[in-house]
Length: 214
Image 1 (cartoon, helix red, strand yellow):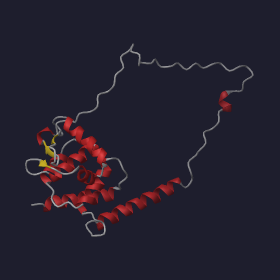
Image 2 (cartoon, rainbow, N blue to C red):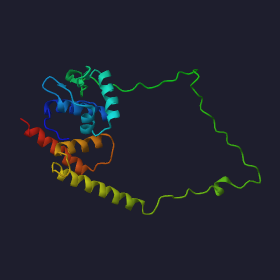
Image 3 (cartoon, rainbow, N blue to C red):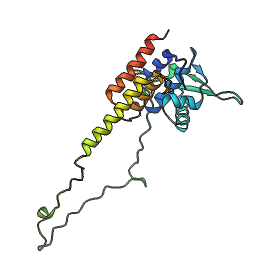
Image 4 (cartoon, one colour):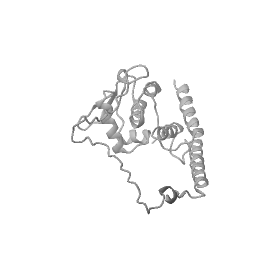
């Protein structure tokens, strides 16, 4: 799949919001296909491809965005599902905040509320040795080469990401630089390991695309 059209104005609006995590990147994927009115009809697999998520995850986060009033979804038999991005409902810095899950509070006296247990320290028997002299020291289970191995793994991941971004857009990869850049930024937002150098390359690629857009 290759991106043939991106609505950078819509994408910038979503990126300027306080949406976080997968919700943010599903909204970016929908915004990138929207027309000037915010309407588009990308398939779930297409949204999943741009957002870097599974089809099931995309369906879950679309439902979240619909519940938040950030997109409208219209499904008609025999026709592609139509999505409408509602920009005025996007949470922004200094404006309305992104809804957070409510904290579960257990009132005192409820069945689910448990009292903290009190630790009781018994006096050792006269013949018992001083506990301070018999306490075993914690063993160090860290493999001596663990740090070096982690560095080698991270180095290999970063090298593959850099090479993939540099080669994006060639017939061999099947990905445009814009697609790959969106993938890397999405991985970073989802908490997956992406080096800062590669992340800067990806963001620079998206910025250049935005400036070159008519």
